[in-house]
Image (cartoon, rainbow, N blue to C red):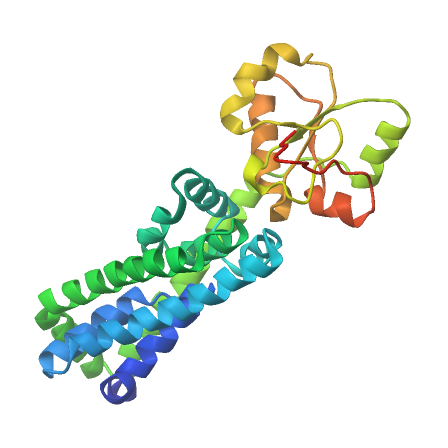
Length: 314
C-alpha cells in the first residue's frame, strides 16, 4: 500500500493520464476514482490542480480522437469492435447510439459520466461524419466538465480521502487487498450485468443461408431492419422495412400473427433485433427470429442487398 501511495505522489500525473486514456479507449479501468484521489493528494501537498486537469483532459481527448478517426475510416463497423471489448451491456451501447442520433454532438458533453460511453460516442461521431473541429470542441468541453467534477469533489473532500488513504496504509497488505477486491468486484459486476442481459435475450436464430433459401423459394417472411435509418450505408435486405421498438404497436395490424418474422441489426449478439423480437412475442407473435450475425453476416455471405440511392432510406 505504501508503494502505491509513493507511486501516486511521484508519478500521479502520469498514472492519471494513462488511466484516463485506457478507460476512454474502452478498458474497464475506472479513472474517476483515480482523479479524485490525485486531486486530494494535490490539495494536501499544495501541487497544481491545473496540471492535473490538463493531463486528464489530454488523455481523454487522445483516446476519443482514436475512436473518432476509426469511425471516420471504418464507419459503423467499428461499433461492433467496441461492443466486443466493452463489458457494458449491449443495450447501453444501443442507448448511446440512439442518444447521439437524437441530439448530435451535444451528447459528447456528458457521455463521459457513464463508463464506456465516451468511446462509443466518439466512434459514432466519426462514422456519422461529424466535423473534426466540432468534435474536438464538444469533446474537450465534455472532458473538462467530467475531469473538473472529479477534481472539485476530490478537493472538497481531500481531508476525508487523505484519512482513508492513511487508514489503508496502516492496514498494510490488507489495505492493498481491499483495493484489489473492490476492483475485481467492479469487473465481476460488469460481467454479470452483461451475462444476465444476454441470457434474457436468448432465443432461436435463423441463419442467413436459411433466410436466403426462403426468399429464393418464393416464401416471403416479414423482414424487419431494426437499425436507425442513418446507419444503413451498407444497404439492407431486399423487402426489409425499418421498425424500431417504439413503432411495433403501430405496425401490428399490418402483420398476420401466423406470418414468419425475421429481424436483424448490425450489433453483436443481435441485441437490438432480439429486443424487438421479444416485444413482438409480448404481443402474441411467436414465429419471430433474429437473423444470426445480422446484416454483416448477410453481406459477408454475398447475398443481395438494396443500397440507398440519392438519400433513399427504404
